[in-house]
Image 1 (cartoon, rainbow, N blue to C red):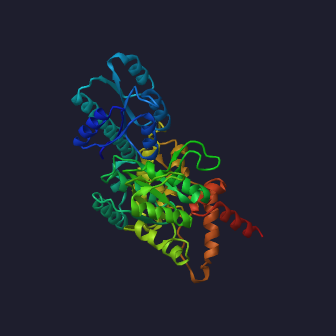
Image 2 (cartoon, helix red, strand yellow):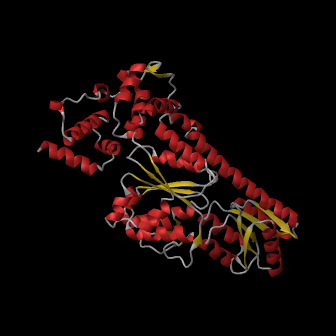
Image 3 (cartoon, rainbow, N blue to C red):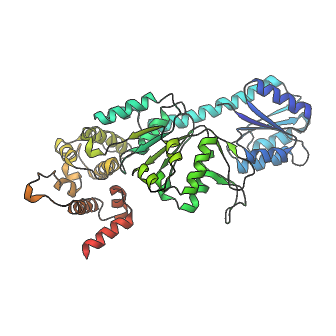
Amino acid sequence: MSLKIVIAEDEDITRKYLLQALKREGYLAVGAKNGREALEQIRGEHFDVLITDVRMPEMNGIELLGKVKEEQPGMEILVITGFGSIDAAVEAMKKGAYEYITKPFNLDELIMKVKNIHERRVLRRQNVALKAFFGMDKEVSLIARSEAMRKIVDIVEGMSDSDCNVLLTGESGSGKSLLARIIHFTSRRQGMPFLSLNCATVKDELLANELFGHEEGALAGAGNRKQGLVELADSGTLYLSGIPDLPLDVQTALLKVIEEGEVCRTGARAPVKINVRFIAAATRGVRESIAQGTFMEDLYYRLNVMELAIPPLRERREDIEPLCAYFLRRHLAGSHKKISGFARESIEILTDYSFPGNVRELENIVERAVIIEQGALIIPQSLPVSLRRFRIETFQPEGIRTIEEVTREYTHKVLAMVDGDTKKAAELLGVSELSLRRLLKEESL
């Protein structure tokens, strides 16, 4: 991705000279005649680098630097100063400038400094990407032992050169967020931002602001200008889970963003160009929401260029043992314990369990076991009591129970496993805490 540069220089000849030179190098550059004009451009569009003269009318370079660093702390700033103004250059460095160059400057030297800024930003992004990628472990393909998950991994590997939007479907806790990260960090965008938002956890009136941002003073009670997640994810990936919960007005705005490749903050005079890949996720059927009129069909097709349905863990029991090993390594890292694995009986208990909370529930069980276990292997006694008592039942004609009875039993087993914590139990079961409390209340009547 090319750098976007704004040049604040009041001398027309110098400004045009710099613009031509930077554009020849392949950079996207625009000019401003003074600090005030440069600040307006920076507030209206994303830039990576500011090159500013110190002495300018209306707003000088030091004042501009201070405002930019306050509003855009990630922007790199290169200061141009006259030979007799070294003190100003030193002040600029103290306020956060990347470097300074004195007039009359050598163009090759300035271009080299811009290239150094570019390389530094690329390396910083790569380091962030590598940390995130290795943090989730590159052995992820090894935990896909079941045929269903191997097919999904094959599809993801085949998408590595594609920028298509993806829709992930599956029960709560089935591993959608992990798969979204794998898609991003194995794609061409892996060195760029990966941001996420759970649409179901944000109040309707705040969703638009979280996604699209606002200008200063545009919203009651809001202070400084805020960039939305769509803008912050420029060049990278934005993962939106719980998309059926998006209000229709936000759906309309999001569809426009995807179709036009630009986002407009609330109160802004002009939109900002963006290039974002969207990965969306849903725990329930989006087509049902379309039929009910609560989800836009056009948005569905824009997000669903590729759909991946993740089966629940109970339908891919072959993945349970390698997932146990994967989570054990993850949670051992900060425990200072020397646990080499699971006792065979523990694996059998886990493999027999139905995991209503899917992969998320399994990770919670392993994390808890690591805390409790004192030996070299995780033994059955380190697993939740309710889990140890559970066994897949052999159905007899006279012993068949209703769905309601089975649901209540599962609910109580999960509650017991989390020591009665209704919030955590609701999360594992994939329901709201209010629904869980209602179920328990009905049972007591």
